[in-house]
Length: 324
Image (cartoon, rainbow, N blue to C red):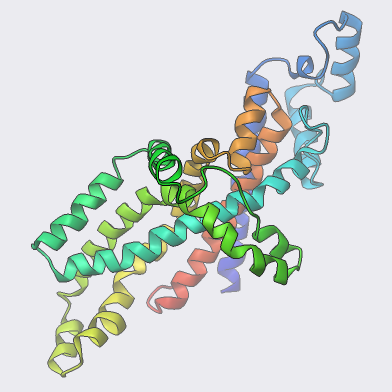
């Protein structure tokens, strides 16, 4: 177990180096970043002084080593827009993005498993066809378009849900204020429903198809037929025998799913004015706030790597056949 964890951590370090290399190179490709730190009326002498003070007059390897050294200390530089450390701005927006992503993942898993199992148990019927049609429809609709349609119909038309806004519950929980987190949870879920469904509908559709195909394969296995021959109830056969094996591919997909949902969150946050990293990065790109963009990319990469490690450990726990 510990050998596996150490090996994965070493691989994670290599991935982080690659991420930092790409983000730093993108900064260099974009032109001389010195002009981002000076006014439009700055003289040539002021530009040269700023370039020297920030180290942009040094060679590319020297600048990259300095960049990595600062990252190791948690220093991503000062945000050009917010006039504060870039990492602080990203960490302030991260809980809102994590809330939306986890809620979308919860929707995609909780609804996908019963839909997939139900379709597999009624293979070839209209129920199966309806679930598969829903799956294809969900994988064809862009999340931002679905979000806009939900705002128009459920928000502006029926006025069931708010079209924007956010009530934090993860941040109070991380700060140790459990009472405040639990108190704000109902209101937070109320604001999460529309953006969470807009983000998670694609994954829900794909996961339902995955669970269905996996269940169809498992139901043909000898141990399932043996369990039925022993007189075990159909519910016990499905839940305790077939489903436990059928959802293993879904567990594998969850690690990649989180990274995919993070990508979908970026656009949906703009649609619903959600105060997360997606909207932060979008504004930072428009304002050419490079430190905030770099900090966001590295932080999201760290979150994605950590979650994949956890998923691998959980997979090995629920399936003894897997050797770490």
